[in-house]
Length: 157
Image (tube, rainbow, N blue to C red; front, side):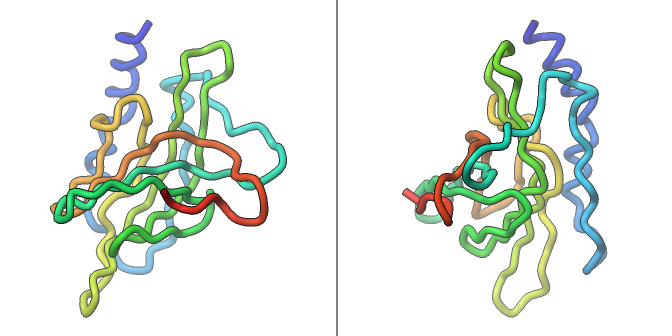
């Protein structure tokens, strides 16, 4: 079951690496297309109390420190010089093996330089290397999609 799914994901998202090329400045963000063609079990997080968030993990390669943080769907979150926007966050139905998939747009805002779009595409929690951010200082990966309780997402650990 995993091999056909992996092959379908590879075939369906072979262009994800191409999405890492910088786009012209101030372009309207692409609307995320659901990766349902590869996995019909993916669905949005069921509605409930709180806010839909993607739990992400960032690695600063200079300091070798990792940080888990929550990025609300539809909002921008900062990690170092990166601005990470979660376009959508999907999970597998309960009957299927656990999987979380998030559509991320990552822009590097270095001081004194123009913003540079580094990544726009789907990231998979179970296979982070399938579609990864290629950056010299930072790594970002999806851990899960969940609902944050209360008025604000939980603080970073």
